[in-house]
Image 1 (tube, rainbow, N blue to C red):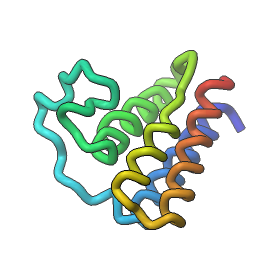
Image 2 (tube, rainbow, N blue to C red):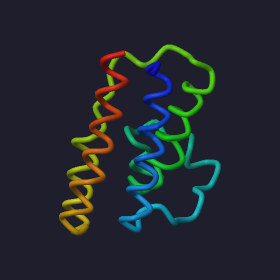
Image 3 (cartoon, rainbow, N blue to C red):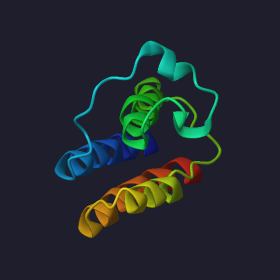
Image 4 (tube, rainbow, N blue to C red):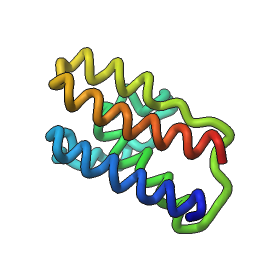
Length: 110
């Protein structure tokens, strides 16, 4: 299985995990929110919004184009901190962070 296929599977797993943790259903951010210059669009989106509408979308675009991966991906620590701060159920935190760690690893090691 190619790295692009593995990443596509990992992105689907992240989506399913976020849905199970009730972190998927949310309004689409305004178009202007995507113009943020801050990491994770922290000034214009919640972290789950960024994951859904920016992170997953951009990585899916790379998969579809079979494009080169970024040199490094290290999103899991921010996700872990956010989920802990928001007091998301511990089991959901663990599953979501593991899903993001898998994506971080696939992108960074490709």
